[in-house]
Length: 121
Image (cartoon, rainbow, N blue to C red; front, side, top):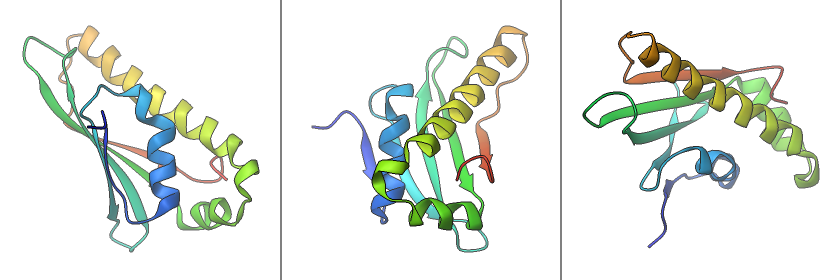
């Protein structure tokens, strides 16, 4: 059995999920869902063990602006590395922010959104 679960209709959204999968524990689920405007988003569901004495289910949504997603999809595969690096940096920052909130004694939200636009592609 694969350590991660991918439920993505679009190959490029699954590709993005695979780029960030190692930032999350095994058994994390990556799902493609349409945003309100129909643009695909990547929703990461994982069980976080490091935010308290009990496990917490957290959902992180990666929302890419429609124009940026269109530019990304138009890129040849060999030129997508910069977008991958930006995605990883933003997701790492979001996870780091959750860890900082927990360390400061603040409540850790169960839902987080990472918005990507011009910087992505």
